[in-house]
Amino acid sequence: MKQWYEELFENYAIKYDNEIFTQGTIGECDFIEKEINYDKNIKILDIGCGTGRHSIELAKRGYKVVGIDLSESMLQRAKQKALEANLQIDFHINDARNLPFSHEFDLVIIICEGAFSLMETDEMNFQILQSAANALKSNGKLIFTTLNGLFPLFHSVQDFMDANTKEGNTIYDNHSFDLMTFRAHNTISIEDDLGNNKEIQCNERYYVPSEITWLLKTLDFKTIDIFGAKLGAFSRNDKLSTEDYEMLIIAKKS
Image 1 (tube, rainbow, N blue to C red):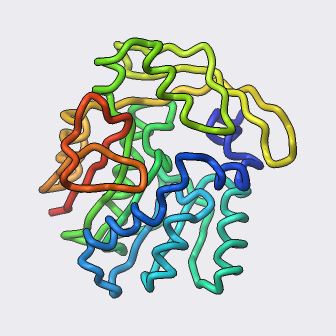
Image 2: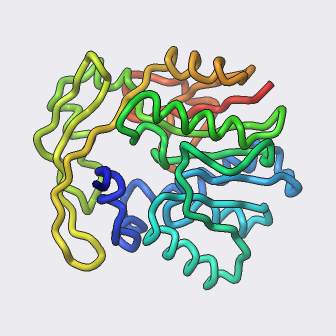
């Protein structure tokens, strides 16, 4: 049986590229470049690359990128876009919890809930961070975004629901948040690229900064910085607040 995220991203690549939350690619890649000091010799792994928007933009700027995703239709779209842009990018179908890489990359990115926080259990989410850590060289850097648990703690369910309706092609309903598990449950209704209407029961894990810090410390990351994640405008100047729907994490390995 397919999990909700597999069902969601099946035949959804074209509409995904037109969603509001995918429009910040240029600014996000500007930030990534700055974080790696514009060093064109580094090797980048994009986990949960989707239609390849960050992989392609970084490759255009001269970086060597490998993109992995669980969705065949998303990767087909990524390969098509890379071909049209005359770019050489390695795109592979892989489960982010079990990647075949060991100390190969200088930078790993997981942007826009690319994989982390979508899994069914906390253990499975942790396995994604573990895979990312294993893929990194010593002194390598991990940059990722995840859902900010401070947001639902400080907002009413109605405010929380309103914030969740940011996806232009997606309708959210039956929204609830479990304080014991920090998981949001809702029903989402979408129309896929083939015109099929889908109703999907989804659940996502929200994290608070102290949890993220502890998880990364257990994986031997030495410096862990957490900020608010603004669409298309990542910055170390954005102190994380209860108004941030997502947080941006930058961690450096020992």
